[in-house]
Image (cartoon, rainbow, N blue to C red):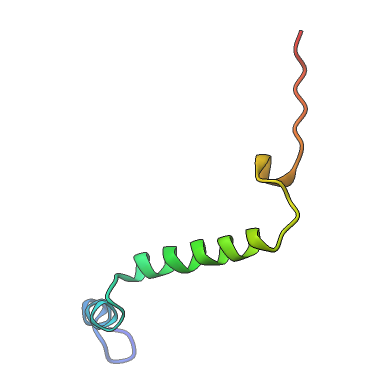
Length: 57
């Protein structure tokens, strides 16, 4: 128990309140944050904005 609640009760209340699991909610927030950052960034999508140089023999 944590703060007087069972973990399973907290998970259930979260899902009832938000309509998704904590993991689904977290993933959605992270993806939305990433999309917003990409919209206002001048970095390229390839290699996370870093240039990789390959040497071919």
